[in-house]
Length: 156
Length: 156
Image 1: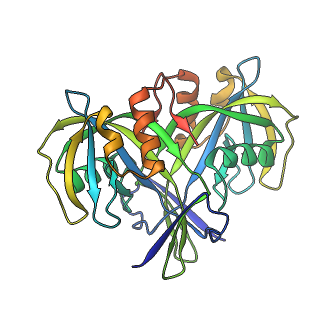
Image 2: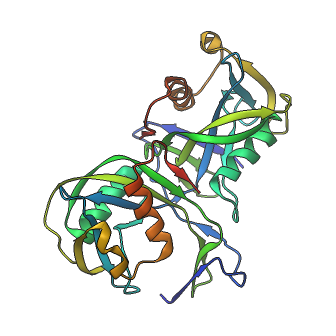
């Protein structure tokens, strides 16, 4: 379905939907963050996706990371809760979805980086290399918060 | 609208909806927790409610606490994220809503306990008195987590 993303855009339509989604910040033993290249917009991102019915939210984080990256994780904490109402996604069926996303800290348990229908590339990327990758600012924010190891989750 | 609550009930219908909601754990200077008596089921609970479109989730916590209790708060942290798929609410229009609730730590800024259309009574209740109040087990869990002052949010 065609979609348009708005971020701090005064011309954005008013939201009429909230869908719970997650992202996962997970690093390897060298401190490199797990990134996928999204097939829907070509940008690099940390893995994530929407919660399914019948699922605990931590199960969503484990499932989406496995599906999009091939990497097995367990949820080890909360990086932040991201609910900026000025970040909306408009779909061709009339849905205007307001961002609602929890970023979890994932602990890597194993598995090999593996692309999927939703991810054309999967890579462990060092913090110093991040500027070489096209990453949406909202996603970059989560990555920075993940590296900061805040004592309390970010709430925004 | 008529509704039926299911909690760990194998006969519960399958969820077809997730609505983001919050609760707020806030204590006064004596360590008493803010409780309201809900008009919809007569039980005592910490304040809370569903997120509105266009709202940051922390704004939901502030607004709902004010509406239901008359107390002004600011959000100071995350007590836990509660997403038990075996806790569902079935409505007469066919919606079967799976629990999705974030419990925030609220810092009391002022205001006087004031009932509302959603709350027939509002009280500051000491931890020792809690057993004298009819409180749903899922709500009691949040209150216990709030008092525990965990270093990390509960994820369940």
